[in-house]
Image 1 (tube, rainbow, N blue to C red):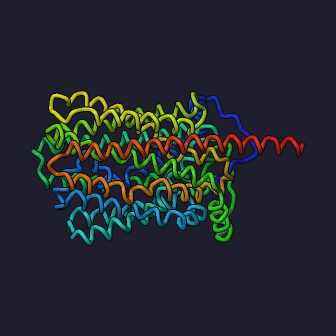
Image 2 (image 1 turned 90 degrees about the vertical axis):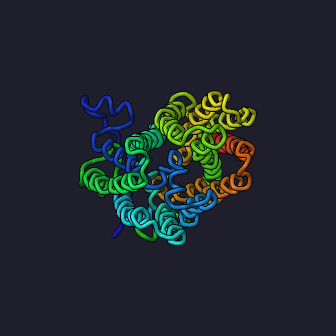
Image 3 (image 1 turned 45 degrees about the vertical axis):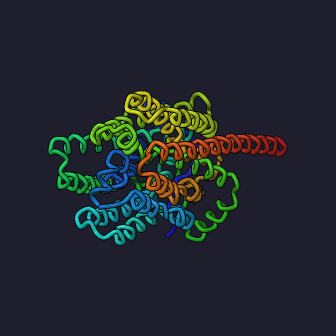
Length: 457
């Protein structure tokens, strides 16, 4: 049976009076908004019981499982094996609807997360489980991105991707905040930490129900998701042909390089807690609280501001990425010059907060440039998969490399972090240059298309 993909129709409908607010935001119906929000939050809930703890509970996870810094990095490197499967997963995301992919991925994560949390298996078993998470992530995350593209509205991509990052950051910060408060109440007992992880893993159950209720498998039958969408049938052969066509599109690969640099810079935020604990002797509770507040306020704000700037000020997610990447590199570089003395804690906090805000602006738009390539909707799934292959490739080496640097200089954490910041500054510069190059190529391609249309008229 042919899969069903949402593509733009040639007709246009005016939203009813009751939908004026939603229409202004690019949402034409409550069904579309419900589907969009469900997709967005499913993109956070799946990571709530493990990955989302890596920033505020870095040290606690290391202690809970008895890991070294390098082993911690290796676990997340296993998650990064997704990059090897993103491209073949493009066929799946062309072939199957978002609804089916998300429900299956959440169910698998629930079972395996409970094994990780309750049984604390050997490091080898942990590597195997996180490897399978990486494989599933190659299918799951492009489905989330595809859902954002399909359910955010035709002229609302920046806000759509910004909301994805902002709401995910807000949801993560809220859950982490509850965890921090609970641990403080019970004096940081490891049993309490384990119970929190179990509860957060179980949150996948109601999310599966919400997807079943609100993300339609057939917009034409189950209630129109958007008033400017229609259903297009795609066979297995056509889905594969679409994947091959996507692989031949050079600008998708350049957009992926931009995303790779964005995510590499973003990994720096993982070390917020150990940075202040090891360099400025801040307590773990205080550092975790600061990291959580950062994620809530700056993540939420950065995501929404980034999306707004892309849609309403710079009129381009690619241009916005070029500017924010340049700014993030500059801000992080200033941190190198701040002494690692306790009296300099406040300036360091201010700089980290500023860098987090700018980085989250860029992270919000990490894969939004794909939406500016004017691809047919039937190629969106494979395009997001190919782009994800590049965009998240840095997880294969970034955390492990940083862990190696930290392990190599255990007695001088300030110098170790300085090396990391210098490296990240260079990565940000490459990302910025790549974004500006992509912007130039996009504008040139658009001009060619306009001239071609004029000649045929």
